[in-house]
Length: 186
Image 1 (cartoon, rainbow, N blue to C red):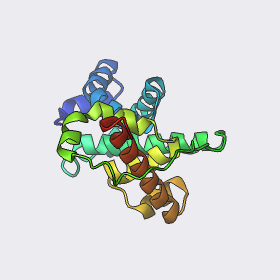
Image 2: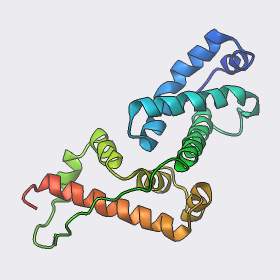
Image 3: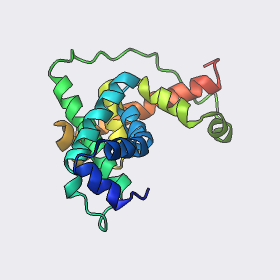
């Protein structure tokens, strides 16, 4: 994504038209990041707007020649989502995990080529939203955004072991759901 430096300058100076133009350009990228961290579209838009405000407030810190603009705004949006998660953590009740019956899958082999063909991105995002909020958050940070378990632990104030558990838990659930959808008789 290439952004006109003049647009960035005028948006930082407070020109509402430039800010709106920048918002429209950035919206698809930022919304995709927010939807990975929130189940509800309205909550994702709220985070997006808070994050975009931070982007506007800190445009003077963006170094055009050092970092691609889309990488810079993604990082701000991820940090905004994590900040929101921390704020809500105080008020959230303890996460209740649903019990699932464990089954043996060795009897039912999966044709992974078929699985890849049938599973599109929107469907994968829907499966991710079925995970508990904490597990979804950790899985996104690890598998999609590439953070280490130590970094995730520091960001979310959990141990590395807890981070690893959430990633493993997410993988287990996702594999189960995918297998179940490919072979409903399971």
